[in-house]
Image (tube, rainbow over all chains, first blue to last red; front, side, top):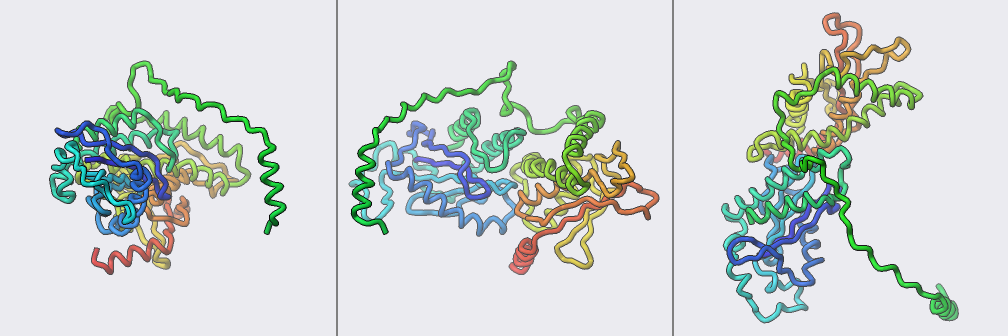
Length: 176
Length: 231
């Protein structure tokens, strides 16, 4: 299970990126994305922003749950009051993800690390997954509000604070 | 369209250039400084307690400095009001998320409808800033995109006396800026929020101030579309 988390500003500009793997039994906390995923993840999340715009006026909740799926990438979104989006892409087995028809996936090398930690990802819209993601984004939201309370922070500025990153990583470790 | 000869001479020129390699990238040295008690802003609590309320005197002093600063730099009353508005704007953007956070996160509700937004400003925002709701919320009878929030006695104007030649000036423009920032952040773009004196007629509340919110036409249309969709 690998995750790609990014914060998108009000002008669809990325403010923060973080990749990590599951810390549940069987995972070591590092992302197992293939090389091409580096840009594909950004691409998939960017495409999902359209879906966010569609659902964001239909609900008053901040957590919009799963908004989009591409192959076996599932994207959950949390939207803040200020229209900043927290996008969490989860992929149960990145090594088996064919991003295009041309590049066939490597012969099903379902590595042991990928197999063991699929509890959450097997069911990307199960209430169990949603609760875990909700816990994660709620913690990130707290750190986010603290970050924007900084009087020197302006809207749509990148977040570079290593403490913010540590907070996100800690929340990821706890919930995902 | 460059000819072949041009292209050849360009490539010739390129090879003639002496190439100096870029200096190696310096390793990133974090310049983060921790406060002496090791407590960063991420360690502070965001919820407000009764004891952390700010005193009116210190606010009045700061607000006074803000006004004097901008007054010395603006040639006209409207310029001064615009500057005060701009000073409040970023506060509004940030207040929105802070107030949502202070509601219980699981039950926090983003304002998605125009009326929700207005009530959020009228109630939640006013209570957190001034400890009471605003005094009235009205819709303009002539224009469907105009709303008014009335405050009988704005706290920010408590110690402000307006000179006769600037009688149009209302320093609550600062609060108008906060409202504007909050509406903008929530996706309810405005054509401006302004603060106006209610006029001499009201003897009971001489400082009565009307905040006029003019929403963009697209916002009103979206709201009607949501209503039509049964949302």
